[in-house]
Image (tube, rainbow, N blue to C red):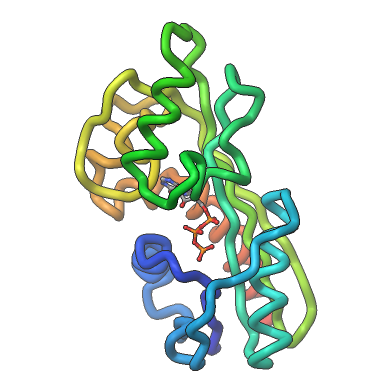
Length: 192
Ligand code: ITT
């Protein structure tokens, strides 16, 4: 089955491709001729996820899925949340991490979670799938892998950050792979 992953984030694309293997023929935005930024203006993670998938389905008529994701920090009432990609005002990961560390300065409650919502538009029919991973934020970065806030995030039950893990290790426990597990189970039901 051909499906487009509606994302301009190459790290997400690499994670999802590694996770899906050859179960689906994954098309990129580039493959379908879409070179635009995807709209993300609804102010919520599920809303933005739906908006990105609908943009591709409406403009390109290709069955697709999109994810909108973010880091929710308990002591900051869920910030940066939907604003995770540009928390510092730019999309620069180091600056976003720096702003987060500054806002958490002196804070003992370091609990946070990554959340993602996938929206699948299969021949125009919509379904959403959520994935969450809980963890703690360190006071300094560790590791060079992954992307975004990975160097700060220590998933519960592990002593290495997401940035210290291989793609496969992160994919075994990440918010994104948890949502993908649900989406793939649904897709398999549709095929059979
Ligand atoms: P697309 O909209 O094109 O998919 P994006 O990077 O803008 O790409 P989002 O709007 O979903 O993606 O923003 C998610 C941000 O949340 C992302 O840029 C990171 O800062 C953070 N984030 C999400 N998942 C993450 C992960 O697995 N590891 C680290 N940071 C993550």
